[in-house]
Structure formats: C-alpha cells, structure tokens
Length: 93
Image 1 (cartoon, one colour):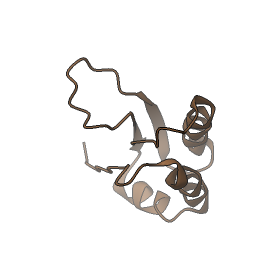
Image 2 (cartoon, helix red, strand yellow; image 1 turned 90 degrees about the vertical axis):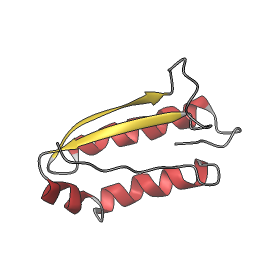
Image 3 (cartoon, helix red, strand yellow; image 1 turned 135 degrees about the horizontal axis):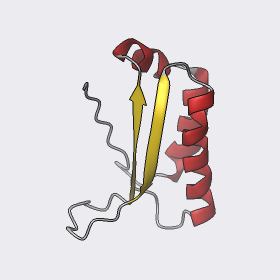
Image 4 (cartoon, one colour; image 1 turned 120 degrees about the vertical axis):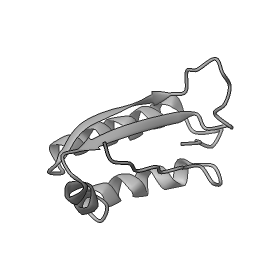
C-alpha cells in the first residue's frame, strides 16, 4: 500500500489492527502479517506498507473478497491511499 503523506501513524495502526482482526471474523483466514517497508534495496516504488493473508483454500479466499467485514476494512483503507496506492497479488501454494 502507498498511503498519502498526511496519513498519521495512528491511522495506519488502525488499518493494520482492522486487517489483523479479520482473522476472527472471516472463516478460512488463517494468518495475517503486515507492516512497513523495511528493505535497504529501495525497490518499493513509493509503496510504504504491505501485508499478506493466508487462507485455508482458494474457496475461502474467494468468499473473503465480497465479505461484509472485508468491505468495511476496504472502506477504511481506500480514502487513506495515494493514487494507485495498492497492489493485490494472489497466488496459490
């Protein structure tokens, strides 16, 4: 994610808490990890934070996408993002 420059650390902390709390609200969401960019490589292209979520199956991931709790968190995050401020990349293991 690429947050707008004026977004406070408190708001970012709220976002990550809301994302982590989805584990207790959405079936099949088995893990969440996230935080600020920390690599010395400098390849983040202005993206400041990232997160990953693991689901028990693709079916559970697909059910998460339209879930009302996911929508609530999206509605919280989207106004805080800079233009083109998010990249989603789903893959199976």
